Length: 388
Ligand SMILES: C[S@@+](CC[C@H](N)C(=O)[O-])C[C@H]1O[C@@H](n2cnc3c(N)ncnc32)[C@H](O)[C@@H]1O
Figure 1 (tube, rainbow, N blue to C red):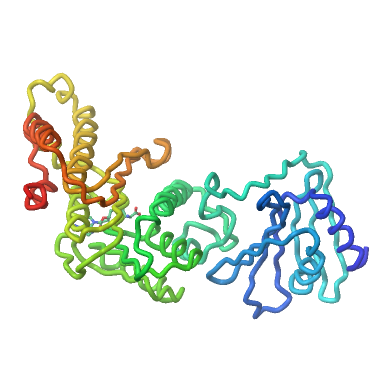
Figure 2 (figure 1 turned 30 degrees about the vertical axis):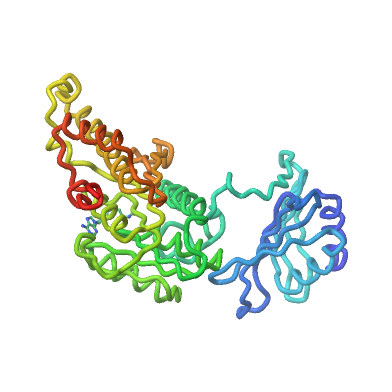
């Protein structure tokens, strides 16, 4: 089969709508800005298209092409790349082209019949695709150079994907007329910080500035280096304690992922004081209430250390959610991720509405903390807001 015959064969299968997906790789020029191209069929307004996803060093670009125009795109692609892995409904085709376009064509028809999925709704899939190499995930050791998520990092990958989904759902609450200021408190190795920067800035092109703050100097230094190497200019990392962080006058979104114990409360308090429009927080271990808890009526539960710990964690998150409601947020407690991926699977989502609480809401909160003998750090931090 020669080069032109190869393209005719592929066009036949594509125009017959048998394409499931394809990855075209190995640029002919080392300096090529586009590293690889992925193809998949999608339906837009009822019309069949092939979506071309161009993967650059740091960004992805998409182009949706109707079948009438597909020939030119296939010509262009094989002028630029020498390798293709193409999945059709009843056949897998592997192509390798020599520099002079000698064709090595391998077809495997023994594969199970594959379904074509025309859905453009990426929601049900990961926002970060688990087979696309992302430079930040490679640098953070989550993916291999080829873009494969490492087995021991899969839970982390799922967590950051899920978190980015929650961020994506919250975009309507963020300002559109100015730079969006985002803080990730207790960012640690900053998987989430990088992921949200990549998603919002690189993929969605939003005007954002992101800060990750953590106590750990060495870890933050490494994050700074990665951000600088990747030229993530609007992403900064700072060493510091959440409680002492007073640099901002206003922040639009505060996120935390597993910030230890009251570090979560410190972050929530900061967020409220800034009037943050969106707060997304997945709390971590809980010690504060566990120590304070003193309610004889609960002894049947709290006599067991394990139950006491779980009860304290759930009561703490209920208190956090209620405080956020009392200071003007519409607050929900949501399942972050399947419990098999992390037992710390509650996400607090709060959108600022400014709604004043009712007298009953204030009373039931006071009764609850009194009943537990709880003296929540968050309540103390926000006492001026709770009493106003
Ligand atoms: C369990 S790690 C989570 C890190 C990261 N968010 C993630 O999910 O991979 C918790 C992080 O919170 C940081 N931390 C705890 N208390 C803090 C505080 N008061 N101020 C800043 N960072 C804090 C710790 O240093 C640690 O890196």
